Length: 229
Image 1 (cartoon, helix red, strand yellow):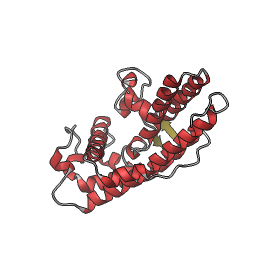
Image 2: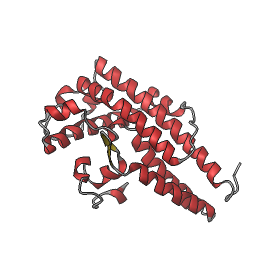
Image 3: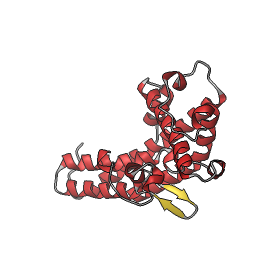
Image 4: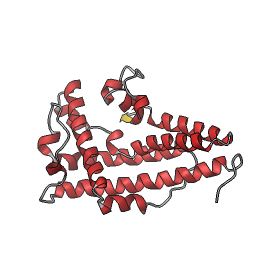
């Protein structure tokens, strides 16, 4: 979302690639949390409810879409854990190298998923379409569940990425986006198989919580706005 770019929100935002990364992610370092994604999802969810209470369906759905955007972002494992402690130690705790290493994996993975969806990869599409709605009591609960799940998948995804793209992701220097040949290799490797399995599971979990959030919104606005059949 462009409204989150090129602004100052935290002195630590450089660790997350800037203000956009800070607002769309939630990094965990032991008991510490860094990032605003859950708060942003809750903020726009409340704006959505207020708009529906005023019978303004346009802004009601638009604000809700913004809330879902932040929830979706938490469904990306690397938005919750960019690197393992072993990888950080390997980089000598050098901030610039850490950021470059994390960005290389992050950009490569998101490009990979985006291109497979654009090409109509049935596995990824079905993972979203066939996801089962989760029972969501609040948007805060949804972001918490989403972040916990994604964090649990991140280390496996980081390992699979290193197996699939060792030369690309194991660099201290910033790389360009992956080529089509890198995204769609001729030979299907074990590393790619692991990457795909984690992606399918993450997309399914994200889809289920998104459906649950929509059902929760229907409940939250029903006393204030007539439900449309």
